[in-house]
Amino acid sequence: MRNLVFAAAAVAGLVAAGAAVAHGIEGGAKSATPVSGTFRATTVRASTTQSCTSSTGTTIATTKATYTGTSSGAPDLTGRATIFARSTINTTDGIGIVTGTFKVGKAEGQFSAVYDHGTVAGTASGHGATPHMQLLANVSASYSPTSGFTSGKIGGTAGGSAVEFVAGGCAPSHPPQPAKTSAHGTVTASSATSITVAGLTCAVPPSLGAPVLINYYVGAQAAITCARVNGVLTLVTIDKSP
Image 1 (cartoon, rainbow, N blue to C red):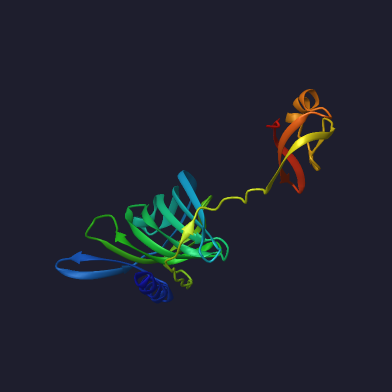
Image 2 (image 1 turned 90 degrees about the vertical axis):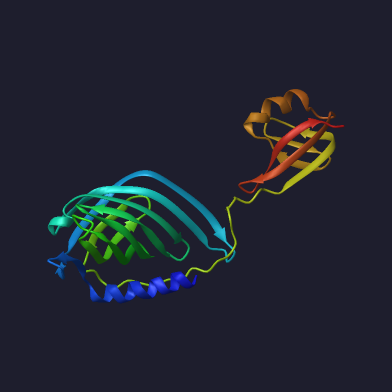
């Protein structure tokens, strides 16, 4: 968690500057050149998502995907855009982090950003047309794990948010299982839509209507198990009473 907190502070500092800089070695001396660009990457490939519920009851969704599109701006930032991103988002509160790698025009590298209700803002570092042309930039975009990046900016971005992630238990979420009720004894009422055994009455689903009518007439012995389905106590299993 300490690393995440420090990273968030660094993101906020660079974003406030609103710039992207390429710097390299020319004749033994360093040079710095301001650059900027825009990008859009909405074609989604190889997307996988896993969701779980945290120990605090919030839903956490982790998505890995590759997004492709186009970019324009400075010469090194113009061309095809390919972004591999891994997002970890608290969908209950609409915040999270997005990290990954990018290749935008001739530039490539890695990025880290804070996600806040559909937008990301952070930093990117890598190189331009050659490995000797280093690139450090603030980045921002609208982002959805299912549809990718739109209105993307490299340099000239607005300030973003900061988040902290705390380690905690997170288990896969499962829908609650319906409570079941059982009874066995004499059938006192029976039809294609309802059956009563030992005082327990349950609705009969269409899949069990014919077996109930044929085999479990009034006076027969039966063992039934029922569960609430959409608020209605419904027959789940029926057998001959032991």
